[in-house]
Length: 115
Image 1 (cartoon, rainbow, N blue to C red):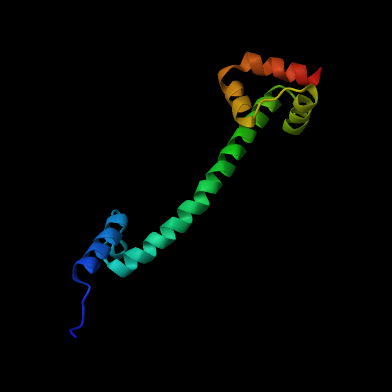
Image 2 (cartoon, rainbow, N blue to C red; image 1 turned 135 degrees about the vertical axis):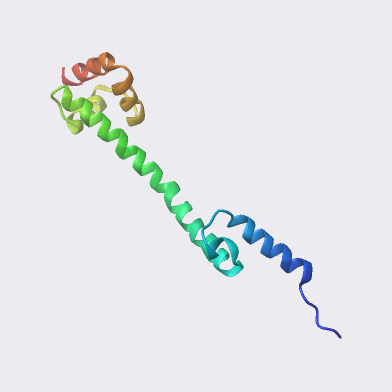
């Protein structure tokens, strides 16, 4: 019985891998084995960084809120604790947006938290 070679299936596999690696530099975008390794690595980074992005945005919002609080002679942690005690439910994204877009409303929030 003659030996079967992969022919079309192998070509399709190579095309699929190289299509996924389009835009990678050097051999990572042109050679099948290097490209498959690069795709696996890129997938790991993408998975990790989808989670990291959420952390980074939260850090940014906290930094903005803290800066806005310090401009009004208060600190972030006591401000957030006071909001929680007063029953004001605003997430950090909304608070940072308010601090940027509507400083007067943020002033009112600080007064409400302090008083």
